[in-house]
Length: 129
Image 1 (tube, rainbow, N blue to C red):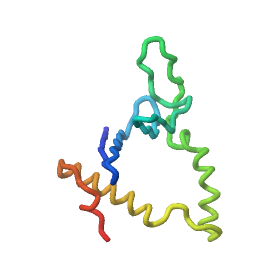
Image 2: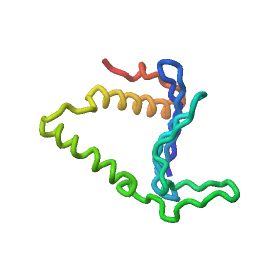
Image 3: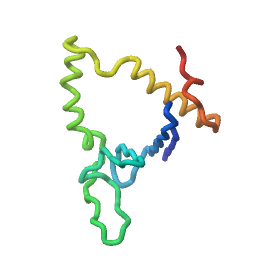
């Protein structure tokens, strides 16, 4: 089993935590949570979210949680497919630029270096111009 966590410090000093595991024995779990002093929000929590509430007397989790990527994201893929076809046909520009993809790659590179070297890695250390 592979599990990883990372702490990201954004340019303005805001901290972010990324936590990931390759396998969740209860089902397919992917979500985004944002916690702050003014509010906390989450995306990706639905009735088939495979997380069990440990509070006594709490409602039980769905006995049939998401088990596979397409179980979880079929609607999202359908929603994104038409714009993808429009981009491929040259009818509209891509909403995700090469620069956007490259930034995500720099973050992944910094995370990999951090894990290998057991130290925090600043994005500037890996970003190539």
